[in-house]
Length: 239
Image (cartoon, rainbow, N blue to C red):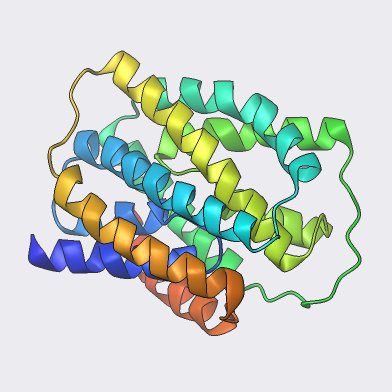
């Protein structure tokens, strides 16, 4: 258990530096630690809620959050995350899909974008459609969807890097809450392993989001995470 707690702390710290909550990392370390998929999904969502809540507060207090950018993505993502959380995938499909999620995370963290861009607000149909799709995927995989929203928003130049990080943190928060409610609506059990992991995640998330929102440049952290997630994704899909 101690190595798993240490790994959760490290994941929470590293992810929260760039406005994420760490679900894909939690999924990787819990899967490699031998936890069952039925435990991993709700545990990852619960840790996500905790760390995303901390990150949202930190980035908001630092002045980076944008409500006009956030709400159209969140509007449809919340019910679709509930739907995704309600659905249980077969074990093999779960591992393959999680592996693909981790590879997507790796690509996202390898993608470096200029710090100074000219943001252009997305259209409402684009925001609503993207939110619905990402919400469903977040609920299915036990992630908050930020690992997909961030690269999309950066590529489309929908905000500055810090603003996108702040919006992603809040997006992860609401989708993780909705996904966990959907999961618990279908299955009543909740894994006890969450309790010790939550303490580690809270400590790591608080430190990482504070540094990321105010002091740290995330480029080196993104490259490190890309390597770790790519390896974990490979193991899940091909072993």
